Image (cartoon, rainbow, N blue to C red; front, side, top):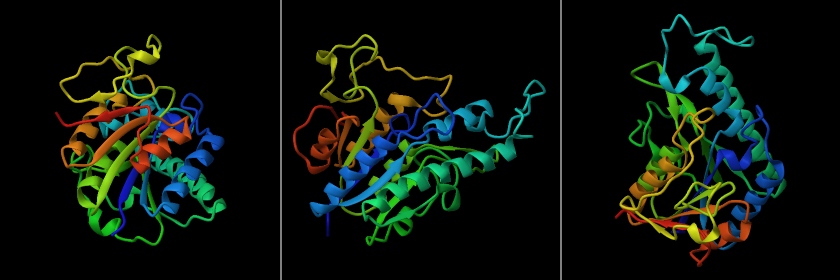
Length: 271
């Protein structure tokens, strides 16, 4: 059975997170090339991608991470009449981003299968409801899933983060050996805020007992930023999976991490 590598394309890496529905096409093409090289080496690859400006901006405005909101001061924007309509729009935007990524794979001759979570998952957090083993059973193409707005038992809907998805994929898909988070602009987890950090501030090995100061753009991001990646990565590391956070702007680092070769980044441990 082929080794499985799970790669998380960060939303801030594959989109311009400050401009609504703006993909970073050159970056996406580079990431697709990385996946292609992994496949050529005999690995099976599962891709999970973030939302970036295709999900976070509208979701933040509409407070979709809070579920159905009852607030008389909550005023809708022009193109949505209510949160329910916003859920539909964000889901469509995410399908658009997913289609852009699938097209990049198709241009390289790589077959993919899109698995939108709102069609097969329910509730949020890493213990969400959904049959991962069956959903990701096919090995004939590269499965691609993503952070999405899903139905919930409480609050009607919520945001299922890609960082939560990877935990369950690593737990429930057989033979997952590595999880790689590809992020934008930093080499991994830094001991100082990225704007202040020097190359020497990279935390090469991180576990929950190690303190760090990350930046979470709460004005844009409706999930948990680098802190969520670190905590979910530790959950996965506890399963015996190698977990790394690397700068996705350097494709060779990502390739090396996927193949188990030494590279610059942060390896995450459970303790």
